[in-house]
Image 1 (cartoon, rainbow, N blue to C red):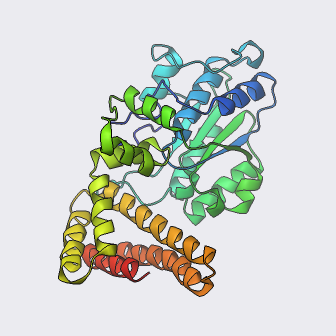
Image 2: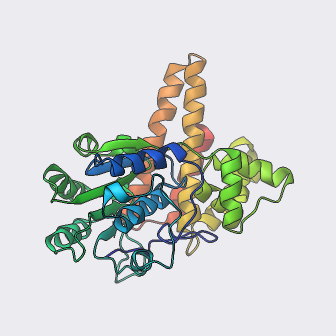
Length: 343
């Protein structure tokens, strides 16, 4: 019972189907060693920036565990999953009775992915553990990512983590572990992943059939992707490079031309089916303002640094209110752009 149909970026492969993982050699060695020696923690918090392979690693490790129910007979290292094995086929089709993938569900009414992992999704985990495993294998739940748990869902997961069923294993993914409940973090063993280096990023993109084309575009993608495959794909396939260029023009521009650029960018970002690039834009704006706050602090301008740091929270609040009350998206974006210009 694994839901592997989470939103997948154009040019990407779903983590459940991805047989290749680049980087994270030490993390894979740790997972294999801990499983083979019988010392695997019942809950592992796999943390690191978005798009560096956390979910792929989780599915890879789950495949390894379920393919080798006897830890002592498992391979010394985690091999690439064989898509033709029964375990792999079951995981990919969502038919595995030993693996459950919890992610933001699709709203049946709108057909869109919901904004959070709800308590109803966590109840699926309770039902999952109540069933008898037909193979006697470990029962694995991948929470992807735990950052998306709403408050009720987080509390429900916490109760299961406090008294885990026998044979249960949780692979808890997080892009921002500082935002998780401290009690959830305290019940997990932390495994930190680092962004991919330039070579690993190049290999990962080539494996997806998305090679970097050299020249200035490649340099820009490498710099702005920050070791994240998903961020690179957004830059390359979703107009991310153009979005950043337009934003830079806005924050440095003056007069009517800057105002026109603001409206053009807001039109693009508020268009239909723009959720991916909209989220990308908000992350870029937040990173931009955080960097400005850091720069001001380094120069001893503490009041300015504090104001800029608070602005990030204000932007998040604007988006939350806009979404909750279905406010005009373009006007919200124009407000955010004005705030970024004034930062």
